[in-house]
Length: 152
Image: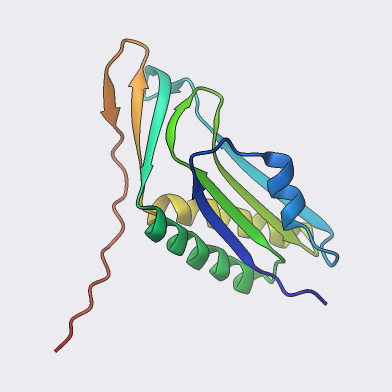
């Protein structure tokens, strides 16, 4: 029996779907899913030419791992790999990949949905849209709570 793991990273490099999915699957898995988030050409009625992602990479990777670990524990999946791209991306470029391997498909679907929803809610990644007219705008989103420690 293999031990499952969470592999999470932020990168400036283009995402490789085949490699991410291949690296996620183990011998006890009967299902594997890949969520592939891409830059689309429209948002809120405006034509988008590009998206620029910025992240606090260390914190983002920590939060992504925390979310993936929660999903693995909750649904009993195998590996979960989460990769988020930062930098300037064009329409059609992949911005995020979430690969979930599991002995059974139902758990893989549930875990994948949980990871993508929590990623948008909790991970410090910000995006700025570039419009075909030439202007750019930060997209309002969720700002994760700051976990403060008080030493006394």
